[in-house]
Image (cartoon, rainbow, N blue to C red; front, side):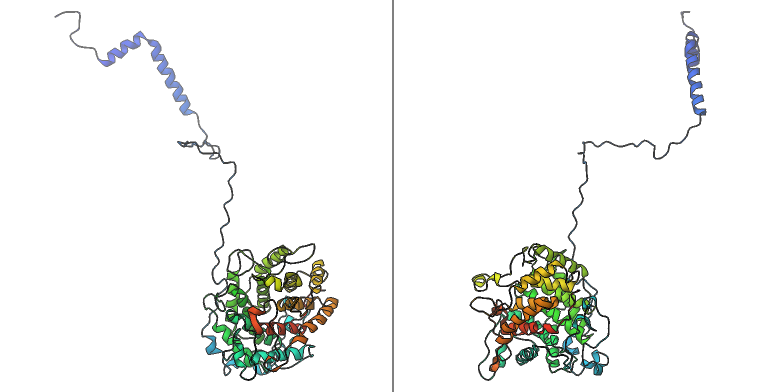
Length: 498
């Protein structure tokens, strides 16, 4: 065996010791590094604040686009339910509730309520300038007559004609009313049967305007009761719509009938009728455009001054008799009238600022020239007065009053000046203005309306439907709205602030 190699191999420790003997600097290095680590471990450290702690973010795999400003989200369109107010329960159909034998149970102290206008309850803000009962205080009540209206004989004859031509179910038939003329020459002047609800509402308003209510001692209390009863049978119990949407202008009929039901309920102080009137108001709120006003179809974004005028009157009556009414809707109506009114002239348009009234297609505008009246300016003026926020010193009052006064009532078939609708609004607007404009207007009104009332046989008390909308509403419409027009002396108290 060779002696160059030991008999056994060296261990790991022996090898390491040999290496250290050859390189003493390595041991020194290890010792120094160990000392440094020990010193560092002995130094106390402060925990960093949460706000100052570094944030670790994971970078996306793709670079995101840089957005300088986040655009706002579009405002969602409101979801308008069919009924917007508290539910108004109707326990029984009104045809089973409002019967003459039960009618006295619907109001307290009926024996003392001969006049519906003798109450001393709250006088609503709209009644500034009126007596007890607010703006309705001037009406004769329950068969009792106060001061005799200068148009009493004319309006009384009109009510007699309307009473003779009322159907047994309480309605007025726009196209077949002449079936009641069983002797002599039957009346002509049929209207569109689609508007039975509307003409019934106008006729009911004429009786209410003369002071006849469901509980009154007046000679036409039965007529009022029957008309109210029929209108409630025409109401959809879910939507509140009076009648149907069978014509393009059905909302006119509904708005007029709503005004009539609200007045009938309020003036008669009827708790039974009240839910029906409230539901009718609810439908108008459903029909109204979001953040806007009204026109023919519900919430279609379109609007006009004419439909809006009737809706404003219904809403204001609702406020007068403490119904639930969306006050903001009246604010939108005021803003819309501002939009439709030319500030320089004061003229209010139908659907365009400073425009003219509406006419049917065909030769309607040729037979009834638009420039013959200022109907929309009169609608605007009356609505502004009733909604408040305007007084007699407002320059717009004078401008619009002068515009209306410049086109007074004139019964001239050849010239196409007959417009019962414009005369209705013009009369009520100028009665509120009073003073010289009213004195001038009523002279023309008497010549055009009082002197043209029919006084022969079955026609006695009515007016021929020769005006702009006569073919639509017929003789019932013309008679009812002109009767209402001549009731301006007492139908509403003057409320324009002076």
